[in-house]
Length: 308
Image (cartoon, rainbow, N blue to C red; front, side):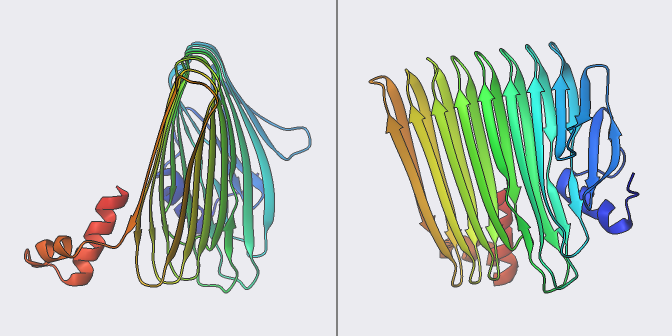
């Protein structure tokens, strides 16, 4: 088992907000190896036979429990692909915290590609938090390509917080979800790019069951010469409700491409999208500067509030 060093502990604090070993189930991964694991009476974590990832089984009726599965890389040139499958039973209410942090001080690119599949049983609720973070002063890139697949059964719900606000040079996020009868999905994405960074976020939510619903909200900021593509799609195949919203701030020489789309296959599919891209409003800056802040300080306050 890998022993975490101080850099890896710092990365775990950044991506999972953990300052000590958490209560409940957890699986820590560092530089491609297992760095800690704990299971509970209701949550079992096991390695896949081929070593490519883990399976997490959550028993029926599990309430007020959590699973933490952070991944950290501090070795330059390391590239890995990990497959994690979550099987959530009936009538559960759990929190799952993932995330990946890369510290690259070398000349080679470091890359983590995580494929997460969620199978959420009837009448269960899952809150899922995934944060990406990069650091290090090397010339090698920090690359993250997460793939998330969600299947929500009848009456279930899932809240997803997808956060990336610092240090990731290149990311391609792909999320696809299938929503059953009476099930609900809510996604909140927060993204900031800077320097020459590139980020692509693709979401496709299929509302298959009657009375299913989805709410996809992306807030992003592109600074310096960075590039973002935001592609949010909802497909309504039954009487359902769907809403997408892209709200972005563009700064410096940044580029943002927003592609919200709706696809209705049923007369009672009620689908709405909103998209807005603009610069920081001058009156907001002036108001904060009258309170004693410099222009740069006012700008940072607005950015922090926007991404909160």
